[in-house]
Image (tube, rainbow, N blue to C red; front, side, top):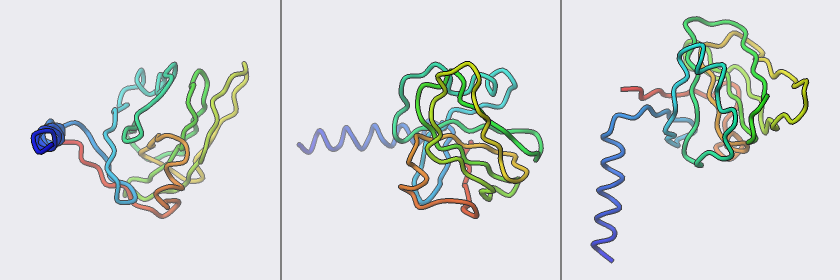
Length: 140
């Protein structure tokens, strides 16, 4: 049992030291896939059947502007969180459903955003976060 615990701790520490991008929101750390190019941003989380509970996708834009996302070809429900240049949440589209029709609705930010974080649906409520909450980036 002790050996198993040591192996699990070592594995966890190795993942932390790997330098994978992470964010902290509501006191919880999430590994994030970065969407920094227009190609990655257009693809987003499309065509994925699941996402681990402690992972998400972070969209990073070069400037603050009104943003709007949709769920075309996205198979999993998401919380879409919009953050300004100071990493303060400006708006949230909670429990955003997948789109299975030809014309998908848009989910716009209520203010200018520079960062958009997508997590599994229900995470914002679980973490107790909403507009005004602050995101911490650990991208090194």
